[in-house]
Image 1 (cartoon, rainbow, N blue to C red):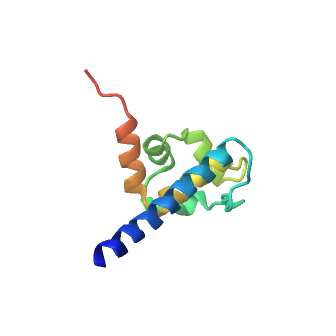
Image 2 (cartoon, one colour):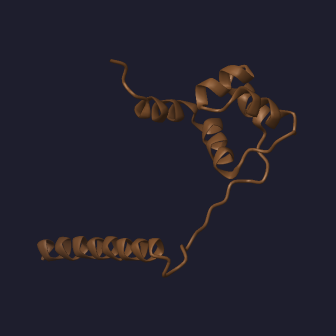
Amino acid sequence: MKRTLMATKRMDVTDELMESLREGAAIIRGEVEPSRLWAPPADVDVRGIRKRVGLSQAEFGRRFGFSPSAVRDWEQGRRRPDPAARTLLLVIDRHPDVVDEALRAGAPVAA
């Protein structure tokens, strides 16, 4: 009896995973809308994030792939980070080490 229960549970999880994969494929094909959409906030406190990380504008830009002039313009309100940059800034604010790790992993290895 125990064996049947485990097999049934495993099958239920497998069915759920397969359904999720089918739904994901339908979303990619544009046949259905995703059940959740996340958008970055309209405003991000770039200066506050940079200060919490403890870097100058130039250091912050170099470390995370932004131009120092973009960081300066964001902080002075002359420009606003685009949605992708706002998303990255949110991740930097919460987990700068994870962003470092991802950037390191994507960097070409010197010969």
